[in-house]
Length: 575
Image 1 (cartoon, one colour):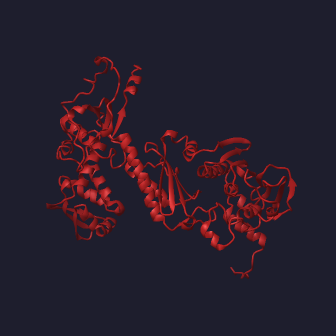
Image 2 (spheres, rainbow, N blue to C red):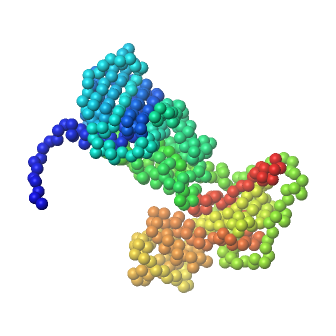
Image 3 (cartoon, helix red, strand yellow):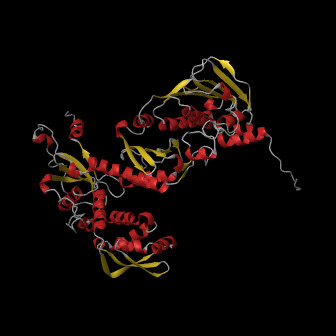
């Protein structure tokens, strides 16, 4: 097939405009994004958005900002027309949402556009209409102060692009998501949203926590949202997050805003996840909105047409501080909610007759069971030394009463007049984890442990031998794929059969090697669900748990739950 050589030529302006518009305007939600940014930059206190047929037929946005003068109306739809910057140097200090001057020009190139605006000092409003990028002179009309922008028949002149739009319901959902982003970032503004004439959302002015509570009402109760703050050189962080008990199975509600723009920056999303790791079991993701305010010269939004990709000069510092701020709060929150050492004695008033509340006989030991899990049960008795240096002594035995084991999983405990169900595996896992971390002094093995590693594991083992040595393990390579453990931490000396598995599973996690190793080893060594515990072992586990500094297992699950007196009496219809 013969090829036809074509000469290079400059595109006609109308073609170039349509191509450029595609970088900014992809769908109705793109139109809404740009119009909302303009309204907010114009000082609006109230914004009303109306869409028809998912925004494909019509988008109408009304704001009460300072408006556009008649002289500027004709100019505002020209390419790169903007009031936000004047020179290249201004890009170093951009504080507005919009600044490129592409929005209205791009919309006018692919839709029928109508702008009606009135400035506060004018008694008359003016209306500009444009079609396919060509505008008519502004005409005087009657209208309230502010600006109304109507965008009709999106992509009517670019049918190839219009056919790629989704159905009206999907486009409407995308529009709402865009509105929600702006409503989240600007809680002090009022937003109304209409779809095909029906009011679908109304957000009155509110605080950040109140606005997020309204937006996330289906996911988390308002009283379980917490607002925390932190700062660093050139930036401030405000985070509104849900307590760890509330979570999602995906990352959709970890949202990051920088200078009030929603951005796609995985490093900060990952920072939120990392901060929650000790407090949330695997496969669960926190609910959090992070607002980062940076000095303009520390951040560059002039990277992506939609401004969702950003360059930072101090990303690592912001990420580190974000983890610190969230984790400090979570530690304090967890201590206030889950530290058994701080549980106040219950005040139940005059208790019912003993015959009505006695638990005697409800949980009996099965003397025929024996100790089928003797190896793991015995681990509880191996060391009665404090789990962590300088922890308070274990409470006297009289302070708690062990009532028995239920479902082979929970130990029922009456403590200071309250009833608790202790997760035996999670509790023992945390006890062992703290013990391993506290006693790292190396002990030489009489008989070294040989392990086989695949290529990935071997590469990580080779690169992290110094880190393993800090944990008290001596690893030596015998041959490709064959390694030997010659020394182990003293606290792990009884776990020789489990060490090789824990080492291999932790090896790839070089950034969190210590935590991963102790977690894997503790999980494997801890009593399992279904293991029967004799009373002495159960009481020792309870005693050890009461003096733990952290009341969650290494995977983030709580060690216990409280079963309130009110709940028991309500279920028994005694209230």
